Length: 186
Ligand SMILES: Cc1cc2nc3c(=O)[nH]c(=O)nc-3n(C[C@H](O)[C@H](O)[C@H](O)COP(=O)(O)O)c2cc1C
Image 1 (cartoon, rainbow, N blue to C red):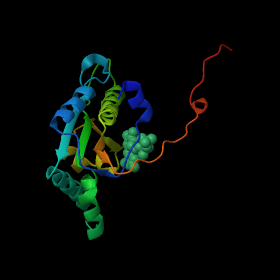
Image 2: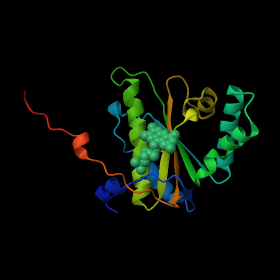
Image 3: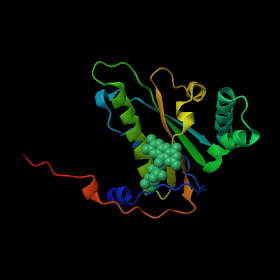
Image 4: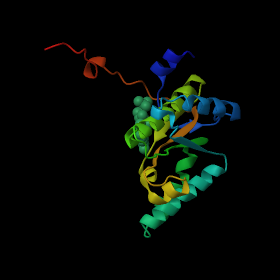
């Protein structure tokens, strides 16, 4: 698929099944990720991927976080957390490692990590895979953050759920006029 087609047809899919990107495809996804624009070339992104059984360990991290935040959490809610990473055969955590920089504020480093995440989503789609970018409370939870190595101003910008789409929702019909205007002098 060419780049324009990939950009114009990417659509999130929440129902994801095998096959996930294999090891060669994963390398391509990460090569695409590290082509994200990056002010100051400080490479503020880190990627941790969870596949196969390792997804259960991510689920346990989510469970521990919920237990810490709510010792009264019901068994059902704990199970829901445990099962979250099992919603796709592959999950990639994208983390912005934010550092003090004289010219590059934190927000630019976080945007760069977001661009890296989107490169992964587009590259996966171009290779015939599908996915959905999710955040939710785990992104902002101190326990989850620390387990994934996000400290200080670092941000978990998302968890990318990837695999093959079971069903793909229809494309929304967006009118560019709602978002785009040409500047005209007053
Ligand atoms: C930073 C970020 C976090 C998101 N978090 C969630 C989430 O937690 N749950 C969810 O259902 N969608 C989340 N989304 C939205 C989906 O990834 C997706 O964009 C949305 O369902 C619209 O579908 P589309 O991408 O096909 O237009 C998030 C998107 C972004 C950019």
